[in-house]
Image 1 (cartoon, rainbow, N blue to C red):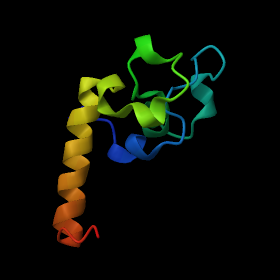
Image 2 (cartoon, one colour):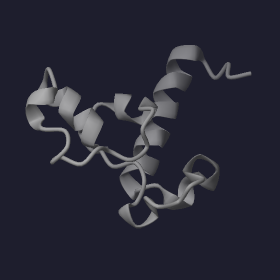
Image 3 (cartoon, rainbow, N blue to C red):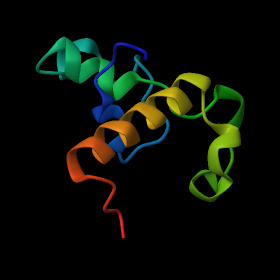
Length: 83
């Protein structure tokens, strides 16, 4: 796991904003900044227009690991009832 709150996986924007256009003082807490800046998509694939449909091959390795951990947590809470 990355140490970043798993909340970053539910972020609407798959590509984080540039730090130059969104300074650190924009965020209420350091955790909020980490969530907003965490990379989900590999930098090389940022220009892809269909990221959502591309699946895991364009995600960072840490995002894949964190997705597994998130699924494990959800399964333990909801008992695998994802119908």
